Length: 265
View 1: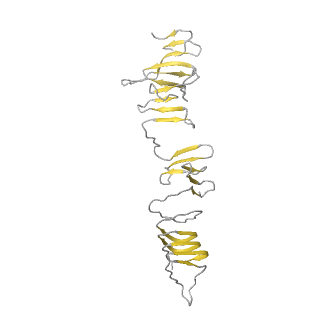
View 2: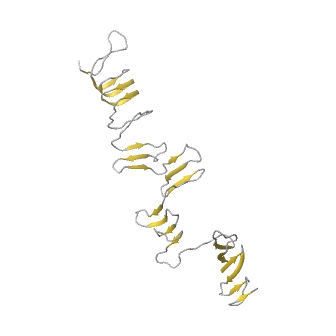
View 3: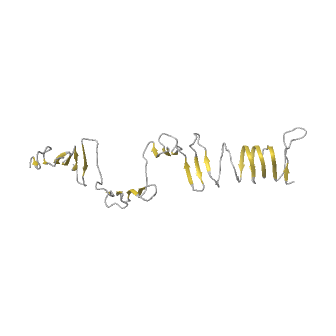
């Protein structure tokens, strides 16, 4: 026969083995238990040792090992240990239930999005302290790198706003940095829209300075600030000119007492 349609099969006269040679086995209720299925199986509950199905297996519950040529699952499926060889296609969303409530990972098919819930972590590495982790804590998105260097490798870099309309920072292939400039004219090019002050250099020491050097420089001259005074230094850390906050100019002196004071000339 090609179809065996029963509620329950039980051996008569003792024994525990029933051999059924059929293409389809269907059971509307109850349980089918067997060592091997070969063909089509449709049942509410199936408890088996091994499923080797080259056809279609439709069931609510599987218990034991399954070896499927093709598995089409429609509905909720709990899998304890799965080893998949080959290509597996999911035609709907795929959700990985996190061990901590609310930290699930879901692939949303309609938007082609891999969504990590709040505090669910994307970890790159071998689960050690040196791994790189990416996650959102509910307010901020964070990248945490453990040991070593976090490297970004590209010919150009651009950082834009969340709407992808305003360019904040650009690093070009010839190593020029532009702030609010997509094509910086110099190796550092900053633009302040609607503002006269473009940049501020601030240090935590008693003075703050910017050095200037070329390929032959051994003691770079610098310009900077000392308290509220503007200074120029050469020959290392040797101040040569000072303009005080009162507007006094000192050449070779650090405490000019009038608008033009000079030391050794």
